[in-house]
Each structure stands twice: as structure tokens, then as C-alpha cells.
Amino acid sequence: MENDLKKENSRNVFLIMAASLVLSAFFQLGSKSIASLIELAVVGGGSLMLSAILLMLTNIVPQSVKHKFVFTRLKNELPACRVNQLCRKDSRVEYGLVKERWPEVFSDDVDGDTRNSRWYQQIYKPVKDTREVLQAHRTFLLYRDTFSGLALIFLGTIVWSLIGDVKNIGEIKPIVFVVQGALMILALIAARISGNRFVVNAVAAAE
Image 1 (cartoon, rainbow, N blue to C red):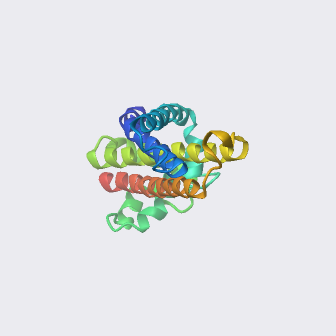
Image 2: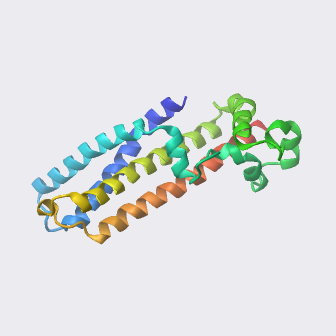
Image 3: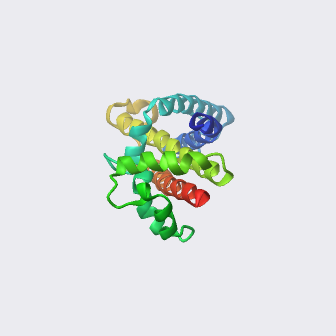
């Protein structure tokens, strides 16, 4: 299921990364430097090729690594590990009822890893094909993988600024880091919010 959703998202992730690279080239080279159609085609084509490579690398990065970065946790990083806390804050969920129905998930004595496993088996699996859960899952994967790709672009830009040949495109301008960093942070926030929403959506659908 997740592989199918990731495949559906691949085009959007690819286009977002390509847009980040094109914007970076625009601010780095300036509008006059890439004004001609030939230069624009070279920049755009290079960005598309690099985006394709980064998309492959993004798919190679283990899910556990992506989740640790998105939720900035080394342990129990998945939002289902904290589904009890998330559901307390969501008005769609009658917390007393879900705690009574799934005590093994919502008991405060359950550790995060066990809570995640029980959420998956008892709550998510029965409703995984419902429209609201599928959409929430797809959105989470989109922003999670987008963040991973944008992070690779940002890291590559840092490496280039340190060891790259300035004769090619000159010293990397600060605005390039600002643009790339802003896009990366936006994707991180969106991934975190959509991940939390995905977990609660499953509870709301199963309730």
C-alpha cells in the first residue's frame, strides 16, 4: 500500500525538487544570466536530471531515517507512538470512548513502540482503505519524501559551497540558502502535521 502511494506521489515530489533547483539557479545566476531560451533550457534540463537522481536517492533512504528527521526524535519517532496525546487534542475524537474501546492502545502505561504496533494492528489496518485515511496517508508520504529530497538539495548546496569550483557558477549567494532552507522547513512542518493528522484520522474513522 505505501509503495503504491509513494509511486502516486513521485511526480509531485520530483516537480517540487525541480522547482527548488530552478529557483536556486535563478537567484544564483540572476535573471539576465538565464534570460535566453538556450540558457533557460540548460538550467531547466539540468535541474530535471538532478531532480531525477535525487528522487532515486530519496527512495533509497530508509523510512526510519526519514521519520527520525521529520519528527526530530531518535526513539519512538512515529506519531502513532503518541496517538494517545494526539487524540486528546483532537475534537473529532471522543477520548473516553476510544480509550475504553482500545485500552491496549490508549493506556498511559504502554510504551511508545508497543502503542505504535497496536495502533497499526487494531485501528489502522481495518480502516486503511477508507478515503480519509488513504488521503491522509498519501499526503504524509508526499511531504515526508519532499522534505527528504529538499534536505538532500540543501546539503548538496552546502557541500558545493565548501568544495565546489567557484569558476563555474560563482560563490553560492546567501539568498540561495534562504530559499532552499525555507522550502525545506515548510516541507518539514507539513510532513509533521500531516503525519499526526494521518494517525488521528485512522482513529476517527475506526471510532
